[in-house]
Image (cartoon, rainbow over all chains, first blue to last red; front, side, top):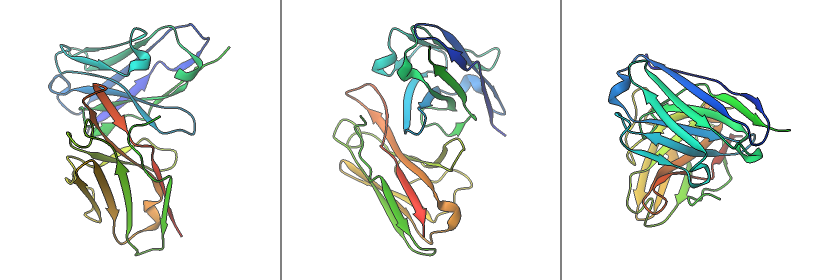
Length: 115
Length: 110
């Protein structure tokens, strides 16, 4: 059974940083693209970034380019999202998802950016 | 603002058929395959349809996806109370070089 467990969310001030983690199990992590998606409170889904199996290809949402960094450690079956220069509008539940087409999702971790 | 437009709401009585549209452009739906996601209240999204009209394991064939040109549709047949959820279309956008979601449609079972 595929399991994705996000962690690292919390309350942070504008301009601050957070690092999200996603622990994967139940599948061959190194064989799949991985994706981060977010959902602001009461709003729709927004794709944030994805990363190829070996980390060689990465894509970002324009509004997070230069501020967020997606990475992975295939030895640890883990996906990461380093978020810097956080803004109010980054407040959301952040989900990690398996594959580019997001076939499986974690339960999400809430990031709140507020002073 | 999303580049994929969906109606904000749709509704039907149990057993009815409901259709949700997803309108895009050449750089997204026109050139790429469409996926659909179901998000039940308070839960994470779930992949419902992939590659325009394919079912992941465990998804009933009451849900059917289609695509024509720069638009896609999701049809729910034999509507059930447990189908009350938000539904999102999504696809890759070649111009944005990123994935885009639709605006979302809330389905209500009357």
